[in-house]
Length: 142
Image (cartoon, rainbow, N blue to C red):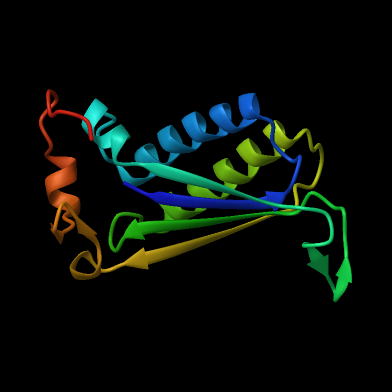
């Protein structure tokens, strides 16, 4: 159940693109973590978009108008193996570039932060990767 934070210059994604990015990154994250894509589990995946206006994005100490994106992904420790991490990085980069209208080399930085279950709280208790993977099909979404 990844939590994702997307940082980009203002205007990189319109509302339709954001909706597509959110949907595609949700599915990608669940596949990479091998978590069932039930309605409950999908509802536990959150994405936050942060837009930065002109004059707030810098590269090499200088203002830039380049569409450079950053994606910070928080996951429960042990949820991604090496192959899952690489698939998440490659897939997320492709999704971001496609919906930002960028062809060729996609300027997207993807950072995956693994959080121990004891440091991940939901509903007042520590998170559990095992419980998510075993969640019943009919569990009520958040």
